[in-house]
Length: 204
Image (cartoon, rainbow, N blue to C red; front, top):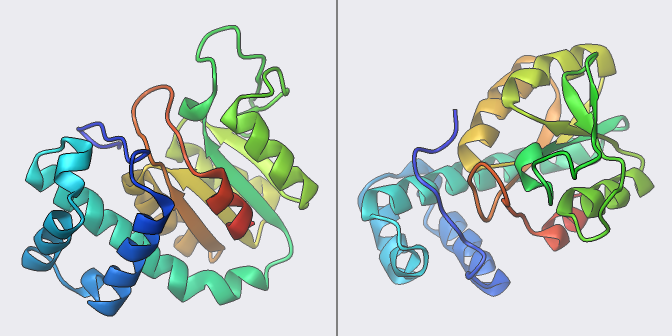
């Protein structure tokens, strides 16, 4: 289930995300709620930058804090994995109609990028990941995760999605005893979503 609100964090600089991560770690935000989250939202002007109501901005920050903490706790074990997959959200494709040449794989209920647009984020991410030996799956929804895990026998997964979807995916990966790292979308919605390719390269 995705957020009931849309957000766009693309106006937030990469240095601000580093500051955000440092703040979360320094103040153990993942162990706190309420006042600490509101303090962070106000201090970094996230509400002003995104135009989100305070409660939605707090929810977003707290979810990102959870993912950041999970990433920290699993990164060493993830680096030891050998067979890895990259899960990408179909909403980040350049085209959401038949201009997109992605093929659908009924065995996995996922899409496969066919490289039809060089400026498509999914194409760029697929190229980067496959060069590093990853199998790449483009997900229409998180419900496909168990099918891919059952068929693929992966011991490591890097997933890109909105924070809420990542948290749900983490539950499935932990149940399957698969190591993971998550990259939250910077912009959500049903189409034209986005993520940071530099962050993806670093995680791969």
